[in-house]
Amino acid sequence: LHSHRRSQLFYGSTGVARVTTFDGAWITPPFRAIWVPGGIEHQVVCRGPVSFRTLYIEPDAASNLPVSCRVIEVSELLRALIHEAVNLPLDYDVNGRDGMIMNLILKEISSAPVSPLYVNMPQSTKLRKMCDILLTDPGHQASIDDWANKMNMSRRTLTRQFPMETGVSIAAWRQQARFVEALSRLAEGAAVTSVAFEVGYQS
Image (spheres, rainbow, N blue to C red):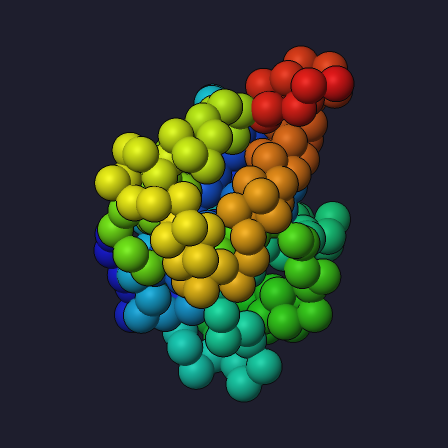
């Protein structure tokens, strides 16, 4: 886990990245971006051959920037602006063309549609470890009873505590995790049938 004083826009043209905080996990397939506000502790894990660009943005650069983590859709315009921005000098002219590019990036980030590529993460160590395993391997076939035994908990305690920490049942959480992972793999060009089996669907 680490944090930055400045906010971060993490954009990938190839590969898949997962950003995890204490509150949730966001997964971004190619041509989407993860927004992480400044000061939030997070961890980044990438899968496959990756090509990413990162923009670091001052917290007070604009008043309408998102205040929470999210995956955003990256328009063709924002994509071109990001590629242009990473080639500009650090001491760019804020009153010239370079400054106009940066200001337009801020407006695009603020108005970008949000993707539902997100799952809540529990706070307790045992439940969080379970969720980390399921995010890494969404096709994991362990049952609720199996997980309860591994964590030395009763099934009743597990099924009661999990929604208290995440807001959803274990089944609903796994469904969302599989959905997010499936979308990411499909965006990489994987076949629908292979993705379905890899993330745990039987058909």
